[in-house]
Image 1 (tube, rainbow, N blue to C red):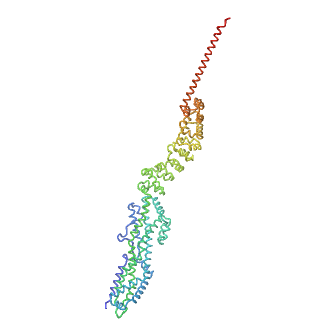
Image 2: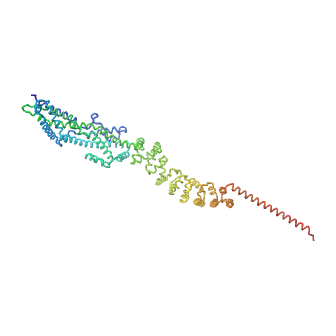
Image 3: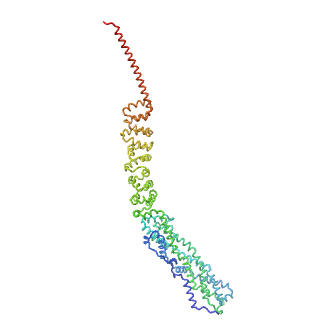
Length: 627
């Protein structure tokens, strides 16, 4: 007969084994990497002093430090609680009894008897009963349910810790942005973060645990709150990753480890506890002793410890990765924001004047848009000059349409000057593109308003090509007449017309305009004719002469008006040309010479006749006798 193992040694063996199976931090554990330990971190208030280069690593350290402080998970307590709720003691007892009953019926009498005397046979039998016990479907289902329940509880706690850590990290990032740049930048960052979200915070947090939703609401981050969507999205991404990476396979791994590590340990307990019964005491083998040990508290505690260890093994050390994921998401939001506001952020870093400007406004989008327009059209140097001379700040108050002036002229001061000149008519100035052609030199608001009052885009466009003095003179023409003229003549014609009417009396100017409106649109293009018309003392007579068809009679009729200056002789020359007038003059001279010759012939004939008459009278006097 073999001697039984002394009771004191058995108790010591079981206690040592139980303690070895306890979690490394007794019943509480922190999700901290064993390589790094709990990370040192700063508070969100201290994030104001960190540099851009330090932001990402500091975010990670800060978030991990906070996460570690919030995640002291009591794995053992959670396993014990679920163990009790699922009544696993009873299920193990039933499974052990069922396994013993089944194997006892299947085991030969000789093998039963041998197990009472042979330790190796007893150990073999114990292994078979243990395997059968833990292969019991009801027990398997209960153990899997325990792992699932603990997994869900831990998932909820990690979700809450993630929400809290993301909020803590967001506070750090917000403090950094506000301190390094301005509250305006921070406000815009918060608005942009929510605006780029795929869904509202309310939609996202519906799947969160009640504790997480309560925390979000208590911090004012519920639907519509600042950065609420960003925090909700980050939490969802992190917890989904954790679920896929850890929780989805947790129960399977726990049960797998029970088969490879826990059950061999149970076997060792059974092997150390089995005693060899006296043959006279038992012919049924060691079945009852094996059943009793499987149902013992130490075996059940061993299983609870093994499950707790297995869960901690899977979840422990996740803190650094969770912190990195939260920090990466937060930093990615910042990088996306920087892409949109890169130049604005750089200017804020380089120019105190610009940073002060940011502090005085809440419209960061307008500032950024103006910065972009200025850089594209006037260059960084001129933009900095505009910021420093104050014109940039003035441009921010102008209507958006005024920015077209900057794009065209490449000058913020020019846009400001036009806005000051046009006042509330600046939109009309931009729409008609007057700033492209009109010169501000000599242009006052009164003249600008007179131009705009024409309310005819074609007329205004043609007038804008002229200098301001020409425009002033042309605006003395009645608006309907001026508009009608501009539809038929070019800007160059209008410029000449301005010169023509400069020194004319109003009545003469009216005659000229009337003629041009009626049928003189072609005449105005004849600069030589127009010049001579306005040089004539009688504008109306000159116009009538010019309108008459060319003829000798007309030319002869013009002789007297030309002689007295009513019609400029150059106009006659322009109308008929030098050759025509020369030939006509030669004809007139020839005719005059012919008339003179005829007159002289008649004169000689008369003289001859008179001479002959004189001779006849003389002869008569000689022949007659004297009294």
